[in-house]
Length: 248
Image (cartoon, rainbow, N blue to C red):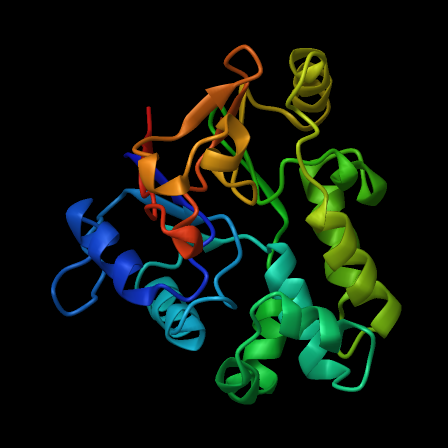
């Protein structure tokens, strides 16, 4: 079994399909060919790019074909899209627009898709890797284990949930850079001791912005915090690559 991760697709469906094809995970008809391999998509499927709803539909189709092998985590844009759809006159609506919201994606979020978004896990432990969308310690607010975090937020966003809960999840997942800087190693060590794993893998923060270079120059993930944290967000919507990364 090989483990593949990708994050922050942001509606770039064709790039995702191409990357999965190059990795041998899908064929030319967008059918799962990954066998026993695992694919984890670390959130932010929608907004900014042109084909958000097609991205959602692709991953749901792959999940149906390989339910034990294709997984999706919740990113801040899933919480934002869900909150905007459920509370169209609420405080998230303007934030959705300025963060690249697409009306066609909103229009396609029927009750089935809303339920799917609301039940996406926020974190996962897969072998030696701890997977999460955001490079933040804010997950601690919701629990001291992967299971507790996921269960807490699933309850907060339950059908139909309440507006304040959607705002909270979005806002906390927007925080970032908690493992960068001089105390990054210590922060990452404590976080991994709490939730498990040897390396935290995340998206959310564009690699080019982390290292002070244009995203178009990015060619690979960024390993930092003394090798304890791996950033896989190439910054596709800013002109960088959509990285489909095989974790060894």
